[in-house]
Image (cartoon, rainbow, N blue to C red; front, side, top):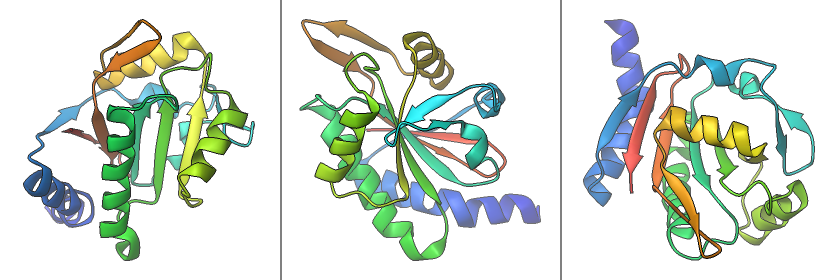
Length: 172
């Protein structure tokens, strides 16, 4: 019971604030462990190989978006920044992770520039991977996307992952 209460205080309180503020719904996902394997590697904005394993036992937030998006992706980033502002001094979420839906275009160099343009701090991590790995993550998170006319149409969701890898989803 104490563990559940702690989970609600630490992670779900900001979620409930966002839900009440933006009219979002929260859902839960299972079987996310695969992505915390050290063998599953991404490249970050510094062109370093990283794994979600480094965020194991941390509360994190993940979005899947892409840098050339001019519609829903900027909204996702703004919402995540608002969440960061709300939890900044409460140690509720340690890191904010942007995984690109467009690994062909979103190179580490481009992701780094994008992070700088948005003036995002070191709590933000921008990741790119293979097309297959990106598709696997999107399926695991339930994000549907497809490319049409040079634009990627995709679900706009924020995922909050607790220290014990429980996932809550916020649909924007």
